[in-house]
Image (cartoon, rainbow, N blue to C red; front, side):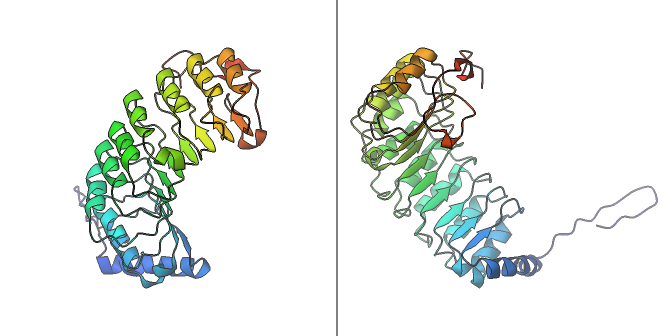
Length: 314
């Protein structure tokens, strides 16, 4: 940046060339990869399209199995560069939360015939700007057949996503699905439970949505969930009816962990869950806030900690 004095200041922005960026970034990456050749954490490093291209062309990256690129400036173009990189074909875990990805980029990824990253087991896409239709399209693509864990929370996942979840046959190994703060309603959940995926999931996170009693009844009463061990439904809007449906659920009898705090039910609903005769395998039950995972079964002795009745309360 240059400054000329004499009353008017002029600023010259300096943008390093691609080659200069590559030299600097590779100098940063080399010692990190020497120390940990199979895992690389680059969260919050202002990584954008050029940096993604450099990473995807850097030969030492070939050994990396887990890549964390969260909280950066990765856009749709960079997303395709990542997934079309031969160097990164061995990736098994990819973290892309808190970036600038949109539905356009995800749709292009789903449609691309040049994808090289096909061995992913963990993919995190939360807190971007992904549309419902683009997520639905991704769920029907054949690029993720080894995926075991998918996080699409804090995007626009809705009923189209739910419909794809009911029909997809291209996620045969998926065990964990996170959809925190999504927009699936009763119609969407009615579709979701029709598919085989509902029976293969071991962990489902649909917390911080707007789930009411009818949606909980649909989920709890569905003849599904043969593998489900962990269910997170905190911060929703179901009351005593929904809580009772959970407490009486036969299909969810395999649950080991249930997180249901900050909903609209009171002590009556909490008791229906806590004294359930069907959820006999529960080892962790959270029906109030600020309880850690290791606390075991939690009673409802402090109902004031349950989510209040005010629909605007958080």
